[in-house]
Length: 82
Ligand SMILES: [Zn+2]
Image (cartoon, rainbow, N blue to C red):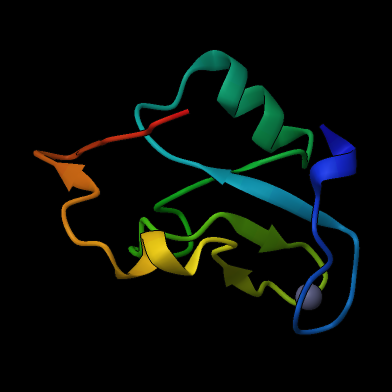
């Protein structure tokens, strides 16, 4: 999973973690506590962001198409395709 991590486009750090959305599970909370993930909604209301930089707090999406597409969330439940 680490080999799919991008570098931060802002500062070039590789200390980047995925942003996960939805009802936080125990696993997600453990991942966040361990610094391996960020649960969406804590830092941003933009549900189209994929990555969080632990160095500079920058958050971004690696999928510009998704960022432009409306309706990625319905009734508070993110519609994830993966
Ligand atoms: Zn950064």
